[in-house]
Length: 173
Image (cartoon, rainbow, N blue to C red; front, side, top):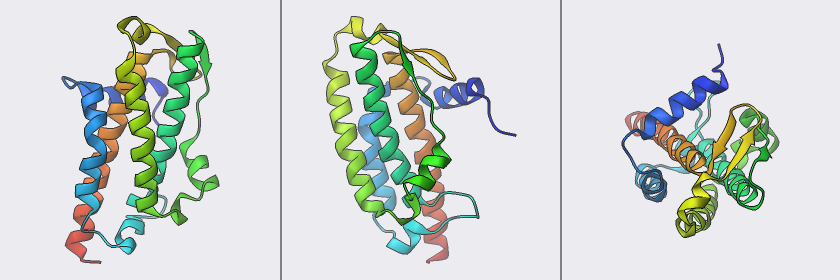
């Protein structure tokens, strides 16, 4: 059974409890680099099971999600209360052909976009963190909530990448 938007939000935010979202986001790229450094291109592209993403596909997803996040933040800043469209990550993965993208290039794209988004977030005056958008599935989301969601999203995928990297190293493939 698929998670409801409320269940997804609760799960993702649970990863961040007690942590500062921007610090989590700041550390993500370096953590990913350490995890994937010893892996071969084949290991990065190996799916753990049919229908499950490889590390490379997760990296492509992180890059595209960061692009979406940056757009959402900028829209909220320019028009408080703006609608935020949801998207189906599996449709995006198929349409953007995540499986054929270069995993290390995806990580570099993620690094660049994350740097730009963090610079923007760090520059915001405190009152702007209360600006919000209306997410199509999850309802009202402030900039602060969006930042926490992206930090939780990072931690969720870091766990996934760590698990897959460990499996790859054990198999030696």
